[in-house]
Image 1: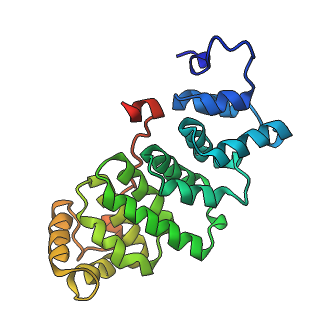
Image 2: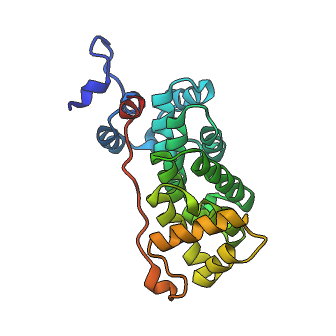
Length: 233
């Protein structure tokens, strides 16, 4: 695919690096375009264009591209836009927000923000059975805190093996096998019928909570990220 495929060929104006970036739908080309300009050198017109895209919130492609490269968004506005995207009615913006969470420096997330993002990601996992849930589970692991354990373990009955793998690995790092065992065996954390279903899932996934954590560790799974055109088909 040619880089110009994402730009209207009838447009007589040669688009700037930022304009190409905002219009590009192919993710491989998007990375190439992003590497082609230095965000520190964006002029005022470019910065105003970024602000306009985020203010108007109607160009799904452009918003998603900015979320996937959140360093282009003003530092004091990044988290607000990620939060908005996570609850947007368009699922591709939700997907792009899970990418943003991975890309943003963890130090930018205060405790209130961390908690809010985890809650929103848990909701996404609970409402989706495919790539969105998979990506949300991957994005959530670095944000997880031991106090999130009961809500996270309740998602271990998810139909996606990717979601279960990622969340299990996150819990193992936080509370170990004994902590997970307590959450799925002892009363008060999760509904009994859910605990029973989770125990079956863990068994089927080969997770023996009597073994040391090191024996159970596996890499997280980062699912394929589709472009906007693929997502819309």
